[in-house]
Length: 284
Image (cartoon, rainbow, N blue to C red; front, side):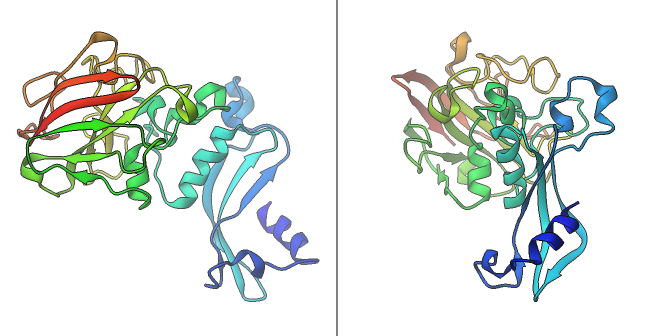
């Protein structure tokens, strides 16, 4: 389908004007197809004859006048903003943060790269999590190396508002990220507001294992609904949340321990939210 579309396009135009960095490649291309996408079809029996929106690469590059097309994404003509945004995240290099085996919810509605792409029925998708933004180099989390007070605005309001914490300020593959998420603006469809405590383990390649995700949200209420496939996000997930949870450390549920159960020595206390601003005390 893409090969045919590009062949037709190149009869009257060329690809060079889409190669902005002049490296011989069109870095990404969207192909909009007629009809509905399989991901939006409620009847499973009908999906087998439909196209799932996806991002992938061609078996071999399409070449025209020395310029190549390799990576692509395809969506339906009636696709929602969330589907396009999610697939664009893949074109940028981000992985899925939902469980692709469907045994759990991954990070659920709290990130565009998971169920957040369906926020507001797909018309108001969630923002990317701070891990995604950091992975793309769009933000640089501030490293906490000592006991300190933290005041967090949202990343939508202030692009530097993300903190990285682990024992003694260590910079290994496992760590926590702190982010303020508010159910307003681009995040209006979120199920709650407050401090998101993300557990990152970059030794993992995806979010298919609920026991050790690449990116996990430590849910304040301790219910682990995301891992247990009970829901894709609720008002008890962020701190202090609807349960008023004001602290997390090595001996709470959830805890700040590593995925193998080792103490991280990270203690977050006095977590509060007022006027959309999150405050807390952090000790590493």
